[in-house]
Length: 252
Image 1 (cartoon, helix red, strand yellow):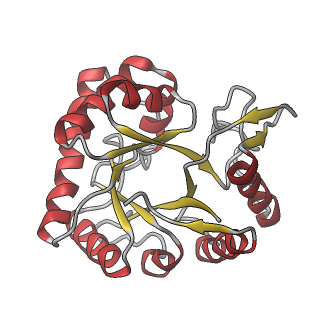
Image 2: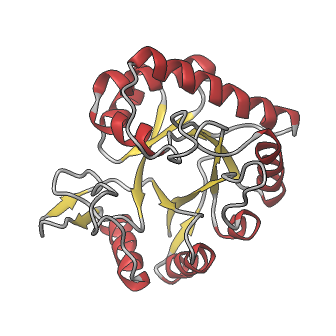
């Protein structure tokens, strides 16, 4: 049997706005990335999502993003490494407080959106994020794009790292994700998405948009919880893994 973590971005509701199917999706994942209030989420949502994850036995991670609520943290911002360090310390500390207050412990940190993508290719930004996590809690696992500057920075500083792959995104031949600004960035056909992710987990390879087979390390698989068919896909990927002899399991 092969084991792999399935993670999902959660806790993205805020104020009067409701996003995602968190309670239902928690039944099909092993790790939850909880928004920390900058790109989405708010204190009440953080508390509720932490409590639901603990009740379901799902491992908890902080999902710090850029301070861009309007753009959902998906727009690049010209921040320097010190700013990146500060916003990550702030957000990880906030979620860690909620987890502790609910009697749990935190497993990981996964940067969100543009912060994640920028850190995948910018060494100085990646190092600042890794340092922030290490200084808050060196036992936390850093989730980053497989083979990226972010996972390399985490390993250098002494963090345990998890190389992440995406079920519903296409890849470039350098191993990066196709930018969301391009029309072919997302995989909308469920069968194609399932076939891609199972191959990444079992064979360690993914076919890029350029037609090149790219080696890839798949420690954890991301599914998105904010799509129109997110719950259906969560059920499908869980069933597909079961059929392929893959057992979803967190790192703790």
